[in-house]
Amino acid sequence: MKPETSPACICARLRRAARAATQDYDAALAPLGVNVAQYSLLRHIQRAAPVNLTDLAALMQLDASTLGRNLRVLDKNGWTRAATGRDRRARHVALTDTGRDVLNRAAPLWRAAQDATAARLGAEGQTALFALLDALDTSNPQPESIRR
Image (cartoon, rainbow, N blue to C red; front, side, top):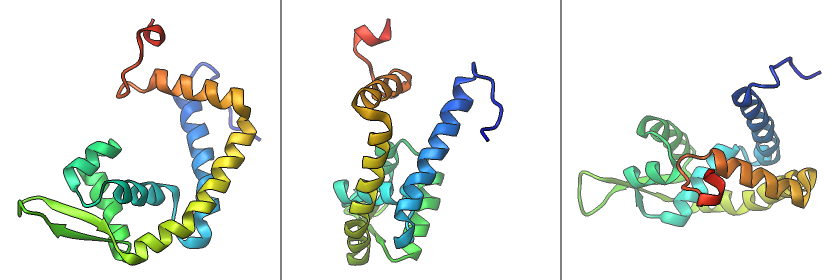
């Protein structure tokens, strides 16, 4: 049974849908002991490494304290390592061999969750969802035709 929520409350419905989607992805990744937030962080580090923490926070649109908390978990699991760069004041982060292995083994599990979600939406639904999300994403400048 779905909890009662005002159908007019866009925020509540978005948050509920986001939690449900997150649970699906987390369940798919659970056999490896990684959740979708950790997978996303590992993937961002892989693409940008070595990356300083300020740039990584901006790239992921996270505040520094949230990024720091999430990185501590990855460090504790041995998936990332921090180092100082040329500028000793800036810390950089990169994947360890273990982190790359977890990411490689997680990729097909993430893909399966992605495919299942896409199948539930259908091609038209996915296109419509992306357009709606882009329209709400104020950090993503929209073409004039969408802003009207």
